[in-house]
Image (cartoon, rainbow, N blue to C red; front, side):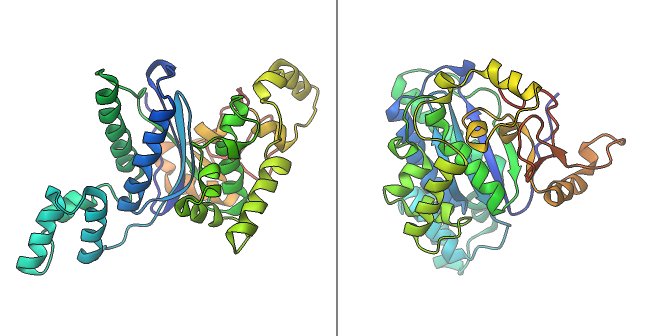
Length: 320
């Protein structure tokens, strides 16, 4: 039975999608294509990219879906022209409507705006566009992605966003691909350092630095002293059995050690944030949960993240 997807109007999501069978289908060219598709689609849909990471068999996105609002015809046409090109069908029809009647017709407006303000519609369009390109490029057919994507609702707060963004940007370090996330050009942190204004603005949306230089230094310090470590990949250095044994003895992992692992709640916790935030989500979606459940907020078991709660209690294998 599929777990109901939690959606909020104006919210931040950590989205993950994996290739079919976990195959390592995505080479550097394919990863770059994912990035090239993501940024213009996000601009068209009005989605804010906070950070991302494209790996060989999956990708992570941390995105902010704005609350729905009316988009004036002129702004809608400009988005369509930038995304599709001025000569494409939908922008041409929208422009003709404006010239003829002074407004874009309702059916053209719906065709252009139906992917805006909805995380599922945005992800579906993103994945389908990549699949069509990938199959043509690879002379193959069939599905590229395994089942549907997973999404976790993240509180739009500095603490929650910094934790999840660091987890995402440290993916290539955990995989042993690089020792410094700045050297992995398919993650948001590296793109921001290289001058990508979209991701710079996304990261600065939760960092305190008012200039990019100050924000970049703050985030890098967080990556290396609060949410990660420089040097070798954890998968080669940290023995998971030893970690679990230490947890069983009551030992406490540091946040750097935690985020060098795969913390399941960050990808499958449904909602992550403060106790108040998670309880608000629970109350809003009360019908999705059993009648005996009183409170929504649950601790993230087995790891010292007391400032963050989760809506879905995974009970076991918090670290995996």
